[in-house]
Image (cartoon, rainbow, N blue to C red; front, side, top):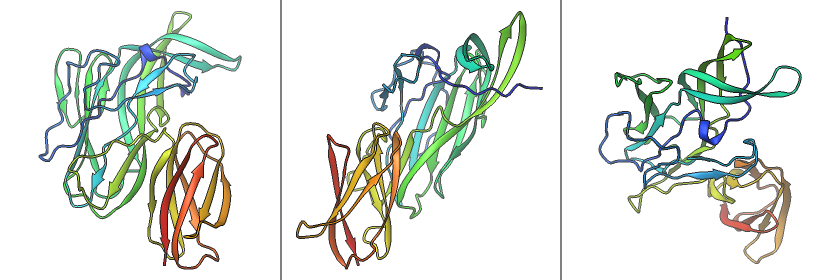
Length: 299
């Protein structure tokens, strides 16, 4: 019988695994684990990495990729993530007398349970490689001390324009020692990789997907736009402070204002037109030091 533990935090040097994001290819490729990936921050040039400076990781800075290239309706889409699974890690767990540090915790396997939030027409597949070099195709369970590959793809991106926050739920099977006894641990965790954002756009004019970082204060799209009754505004935030949302008409008159409670990363705000008439409007979102703005059309 497995004990159900809650993983609080993990140190940089003992991260469960690391991802390398690769710009999507036109031709589809096979998912193959990359055994050349040996360093914690030895990411490829095309990868996007983000420093987590929230202070939630026992005072250490964690570097992890948190963004995906954009997808475009009607195009094929493909992005790879390469993984290196350590043999052990450190966890902080509360047994009832306050948080305690367990070091080491031995990792048996880490598996992808599901990717939550994937839009219609997007799929994923994996391959794993153990420490001996044996590769198992179509396996999303990665052994400790081995490597893994995950391929996120769409053969033909459907018309699902929007912003999709993704959570990768992980099945972690490990064991730790208490008074000389090895205690098995089985955890499903959907908080370690919960800052991925996939944006689907109308068409690809540039031919190169833009990498979107959801933990930077910036606009991430408004859908639908134009709209008749309501629309959803997506934006990223680098903290969890409240922001001010304002709407101005074409003459610059303030016609609507609201305070939005936010979270670190991707945020959504549903805006109803209320008594506003048809026309062109500009909304702004301000965090006190920076303001972002977008135009919307009500018809």
